[in-house]
Image 1 (tube, helix red, strand yellow):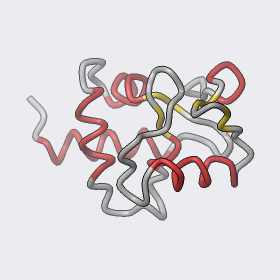
Image 2 (cartoon, helix red, strand yellow):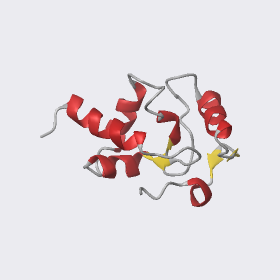
Image 3 (cartoon, one colour):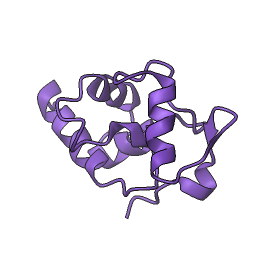
Image 4 (cartoon, one colour):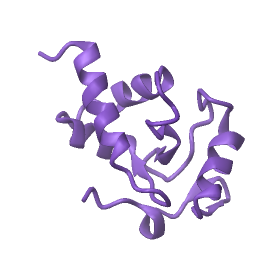
Length: 105
């Protein structure tokens, strides 16, 4: 079993790989971190992100492409604005995962 801090490091390393102008889902990051059942753990880890400048947690959205309503670093509007500053369109409260979803490579 991986300790919480070890799981968080795996999650942060996966999030760091999301390219500018792309998004990933909580489930996708969980899978890349080594456990597809960690979607909620991803949320917890991102909520306590120790280095938002280098761990772009705003690039993680839910499975519907929705930014977090409780984004830890300024709320929904801040997360949407950060995504839009990278060219990701947030329309109707969602990101088009077909257009902006990261393929994990």
